[in-house]
Amino acid sequence: MSADIWSELAEYNKEIEATSLVELFERDPARFETFSITLDDMLLDFSKTSLDETARNLLVKLAEASGLADKREAMFKGARINRTEGRAALHTALRNRSNEPVFVGDEDVMPGINDTLGQMAAFASGIRSGEIGASDSSAFTDVVNIGIGGSDLGPAMATRALAPYHNGPRLHFVSNIDSADIADLLKNLDPARTLFIVASKTFTTIETMTNAETAKSWMTRAVGDKATNHFAAVSTALERTSAFGIAPERVFGFEDWVGGRYSVWGPIGLPLMIAIGPEHFTEFLEGGHAMDRHFRRAPLDKNMPVMLGLIGIWHNNIRGYGSRAVLPYDQRLARLPAYLQQLDMESNGKSITLEGEVVPQKTGPIVWGEPGTNGQHAFYQLIHQGSQVIPCEFLVAAQSHETDLQNHHHLLLANCLAQSEALMRGRSLAEVIENLTAMGASQERLDAAVHQTFPGNRPSTTLIYRKLDPYTLGRIIALYEHRVFVEGVIWGINSFDQWGVELGKELAATLLPLIGEKSGLDEKDGSTRGLLETIARLRRK
Ligand code: F6P
Image 1 (cartoon, rainbow, N blue to C red):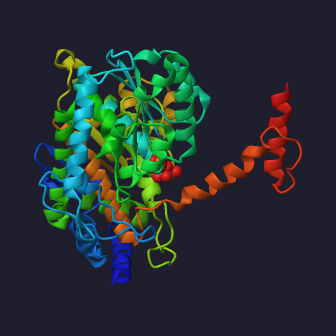
Image 2 (cartoon, protein in one colour):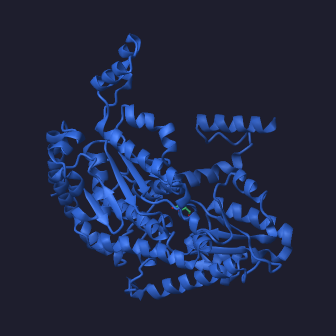
Image 3 (cartoon, rainbow, N blue to C red):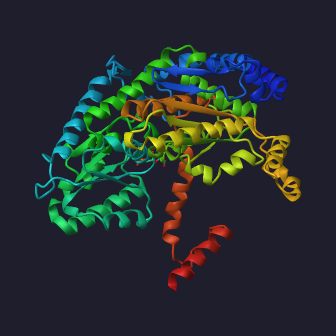
């Protein structure tokens, strides 16, 4: 059945391929109303994509045929949908503000989630007020989260996004195993006023454990055996946290049914809660929950995550565009593209279905991006005039937090809208020549007019929200999580495992003893051997 719909989509695409976005608007001036979805004070505009009603209906049929509705319910209800790891994927329970029971097997997980939230809130409030102090009882001024991947990107991105709500200690994030990361940070910190949160679901990740050991030595040198007062942990591995020396009351546990890249809603969000306070953190959860309700209840063609997912499928699989750019016109969302890279590419960077077959379609596209307007002065050249079409996903707030700097925000908004308009309209040779002639340009300039043309007809979506507050950030993250889920369901893959990261980790372990060595390299290929020999030579100089 799905195979037929894929063919129908491909056939239909051939029929409409030649119709430009501008023509679509000429034919249907009310296109914006038809091809946009509103959820309270948030709107997703996808009228500047080539979808028409037939294409949309076919895509919705594809979603139905893939069993999206049942699979969505299975996720929310705690079924073990992460079959390759034998687990549920229940990040939605972490933000389940309805408190309706959610069962994993026979156990309702909501009481445990609420207890942990209470424990987090007590700790965060204690740190913020100074009641929970450093080893000399003074208040912590700096909190450092040590984690990587899902144990870093979520809290780091969200903490930056919600800077206007910070009223606690300063937050820092260390993730890379590169000594530069921790060394550059520690230089500026006073150990006596610093708290480390070691965040690792497994508590085995080499980057995090190496950074945590370095932090512990640094702290021990400063405060001796009181160093443990300066550590907390977030992990599912309670034995390992205690072996590291972190007091049990400073350990915030979570269950294996929360995937790393979906974990910001629970204890991994502790740094965010310390930064913005438990009340704002609750608003963040409420935003995520509001998107969950919408995703569960709204008809598929009026459903924001579903339509964002289907647009992704249309661009990737029907139109053949292999990447998508995430372009927040919101400087505080500067880390959103990096966050979405993990969310999207670690979830859907798979090519084998849950049934063990090769996926016939291209799966996860390359996700990349930078905030506007900065990107305009860097890579937008390629987006506008390059030979690849890159669907762009703009995000922008109607209101800024800086009420005294409205001129900035008006410029930001105008630039954001200008980009999607320019991508759609383009500029023809005739227009360029007309402009140049009106300006009295020389013949030489007129002869080079083709370089100033823009092909146009390049698709984009725009997500507009009132203001980047905790509730809205929660909605945005949940929107993208569900979009990734929708696409994964359509391809029939498991969006919740990440076996693809393992091989590199294993090989790193075999390479470690060879660093700086000249012998024992025979088992390695010629390139790896050459690189090892070069490293050994350069390290001796
Ligand atoms: O290597 C990939 C990964 O497992 C991610 O999925 C995860 O978010 C990250 O490493 C960190 O893992 P942990 O929280 O166990 O340290």
